[in-house]
Image (cartoon, rainbow, N blue to C red; front, side):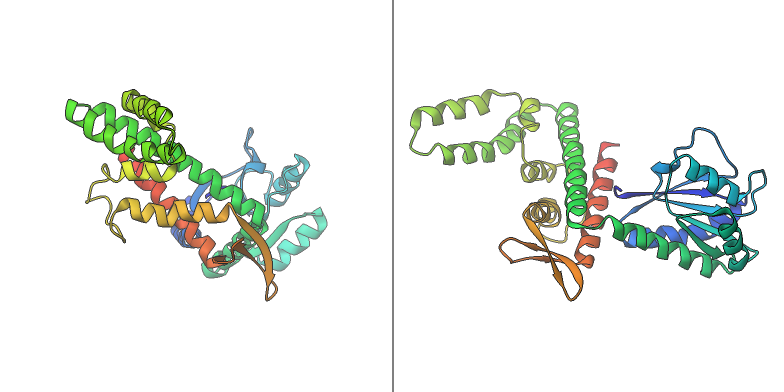
Length: 302
């Protein structure tokens, strides 16, 4: 599971779906996930049912097979994605059909009232998310998503530099980016004057496009700080760089050195130094921040 939560909704009444899906979308965004929905009204070929995080299935479809038969076909294909199986005919009828068909991995719900259906769907969504929230999955999710943010920053810096390239920009932008790189390398080579001069020479004469791909996340964010317009981003701290470092870079670094422990019957993540504990709310906030910056970078690239 990535930060895009993919729902396959098999339902004939498009208007009904559109009238209630905002509630499901709000729930997912509140958990730090992006809502993605694919709507179909019947069985369709070439649908990869296993690629979805959840399937919402109506019993009474306009075309055969009905919902129960389609769930059976999905299981025969080897896809065991959780299904919310619903109908206006009520849960008891659905349970009877499910038992008769031997359906597995199915949660039953009334279609009406809408509040009952939405509550059932959001409860199942919460369950699917918890299944992948162990330490290894969480760490892998954050690392993968932050790597994608790095890729967007590289693309953004290159695009900005090429589109706005002038003699003045060449000097100021290049000097700004290379300054910290030089300081970091020289600190390691302190006392070795010959090598220090060589490193200084290489950075000063390397094209900015080649340097960008070698930058660390924090260095990229410092460069982006000069690109983000005020009307697009209002910083919580001093500037964009300070926000990104605190909300993404530092959190990513802390998660990379966490251990899993149990406290009061719940799994928590604690840094090896013990100076930071990650709770469910912290994890939710991390996901929201990743989505926030992903949207900022996408808007800037456009």
